[in-house]
Length: 155
Image (cartoon, rainbow, N blue to C red):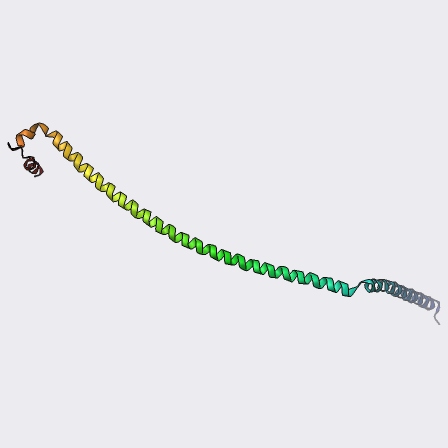
């Protein structure tokens, strides 16, 4: 028959291990109970109605701030729309003024072209008169008819 000493020793070690594990579980449960008791005693010390009232007041203040921000945003939007309308009207006025200035410049340009053409004609006429000045007496009628002489020079 085999010896039971080895089997008994193994069973004793296993029993001791189970005993140690059980002691550790009981110790952990007692430690956790103490921590939970401390936590609950702290929670009982907090005045929940007062905390709730303060939280509600804070939330009301936040709602008031949100409403004021909404009103401010609407006012800013209305002001921006008014400013855009003013800018639009001013842009149209600037376009009208620019059109008037352009028209005035066109008139000035046309007048200056005509003046330049008249000046060129006068200059050419003066040159013509100056270049043929000694011969004027030969081409005039004896009556001093200058227009007939001018007509003769045109053709």
